Image (cartoon, rainbow, N blue to C red):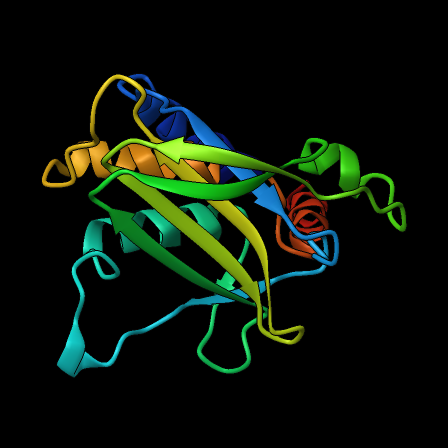
Length: 191
C-alpha cells in the first residue's frame, strides 16, 4: 500500500513537471551544514504589522511547504532544525556566491572541507532567493536563487512563482533524517 502512495506521489509530481520551465538556478552552501541530519523546519514569520510582500507570498510558501514535506521534513514551530526564509528582488542586484563542489558530492565526503571560492553573480530583475538557516548553529547553511536570463520572472503569475520555487528547491536533494528508513519499514510491514 505504501508503494502505491509513493508511486502516486511520483506520478503527480511528474505530471506537474510536464508544464514546468526550469529556470537558471545557482546555489551555495556552508561546509558546516549537517544536511543529512535535519528533519524539521519552519518558515520565518514576519510581524503582522509590517508585512513585506517581497518576504511573504502564500504561493511561494505553499510551494516550499509541499516540497519539504515531499522530502519527509516535518513542519514545527517548536525548535525546528531549519528556518526557511525567502525574498523576491524586483530590481537587478549583484550577489556574492561561491564556486563549490556539487552539494551531494561534498556530503558524501564528511569531514573534508573545501575553500570558499567567491564569485560575483549579477542577477537580472525578478530574482527569488530562498535561504535555509540551521537554528541550533545560528548559521545560514544554504542559499538557492533563481532568475530568468531571458527576462524577469512575473511574480504576479502564480505558475511562474511555483516554477521558480521548484527550480530552486530541486537543487536541495536531501531527504529528512530517518525518512527513507521509515518508508522502508512501512513497505516491509505492508508486504
